[in-house]
Length: 214
Image (cartoon, rainbow, N blue to C red; front, side, top):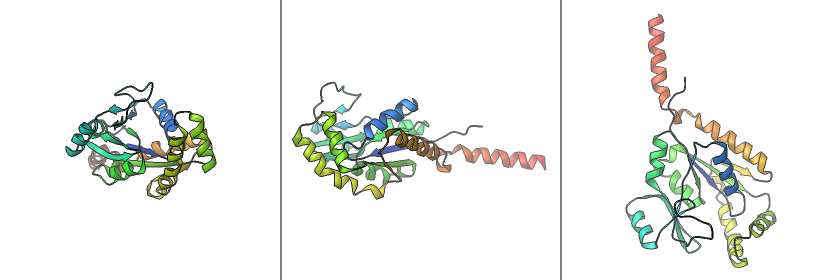
């Protein structure tokens, strides 16, 4: 018998270039029932990005209004722009038993972990195999200017220094092995007693059946 399950808030964090975006995409392909939390941001769209798919692109005024109305699960100011996770779609998903995946930094992760939804959060930090490899990946992406890459490298150690606040930490030196470990972690956490509120009713029924047998 399958008991009703409560959705998880699955958080992936890492310094830029460590692989969290690739791993997030692989997770979504592995389990189509997973939904991605589309972040809101005040930065301008990059070429090819679509509103509502890659980000919810908001004005700074609208973003701050939503924060003031408790409409964001978490928010942060990064590289001169605001980023945040809209609350309503996340709560709707997890209450329906669907997991939600977050690709956010350590500041956002801590805000969610410390919120009322914290007990239903799975946080995973992705470490690069080396700083040299991290820089190589940033350059090879071809998305940022040398100035932006330098800023991301400067910020990377601050992000890495928060690795100890996560439930799990994976070193992404082999993408296939890291992804396999990630699948194992998600599968096991879904089976935690806290995530299966239907077990209470199932055990109650077992107790009734046991009494009837007696």
